[in-house]
Amino acid sequence: MPKTPTRSKPEASSKPHTVKKTTAPRLTGVVKRRKSATPASAAPEKTPARPLRRTPAPVAPVAPEALPTPLLVTACVEALEEKKAEDLRVIDVRGRSAVTDFFIVATGNSEPHLRALRIAAQKALIDANATLVGTESQSASGWCVVDAFEVIVHLFLTGQRTNYDFERLWTRS
Image (cartoon, rainbow, N blue to C red; front, side):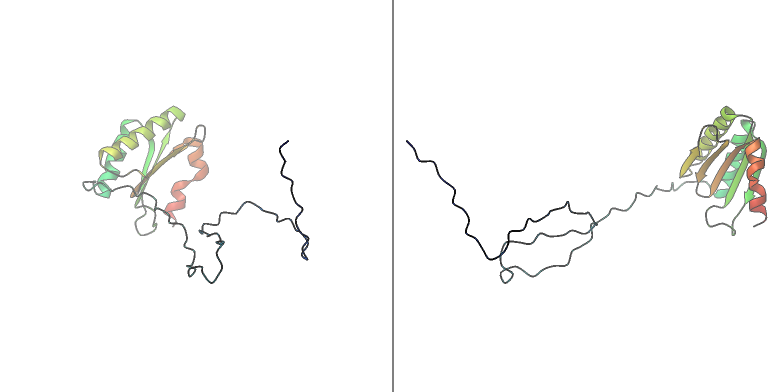
């Protein structure tokens, strides 16, 4: 009959046995190194932890042949007039705003009309080689925004335009 190995009891030590509680490490953006099993005298010199490298956000390239700002405004205004935008206003905010040079404000009759005006403004700016930063429009909000750095187009329904009174805000500044 083969002998089965028996486990011997560990020798009692003077230190009481404690259970080490482990938790998941928290990510703090700094690389932490584990301690090695080698003695401290044999361990190499510690180097300070470095933060993780982050890649910068991509920047939209500016088209070299983009039209000057007043011509961008003219192209956008003509496109909005073709789509029957009402109460069309251009507000020159050069020197008063660090965000843009011109606001174009127009009113549409309905949500589908606002969508048509927004698409016409986007196409006019793209055809003029302007860099579109973004477009914001939510259904049933009554307000659309097209941002092209130097020109920002705000399209409102009649009720929203009177509610926000955008022209008064920028003509008094």
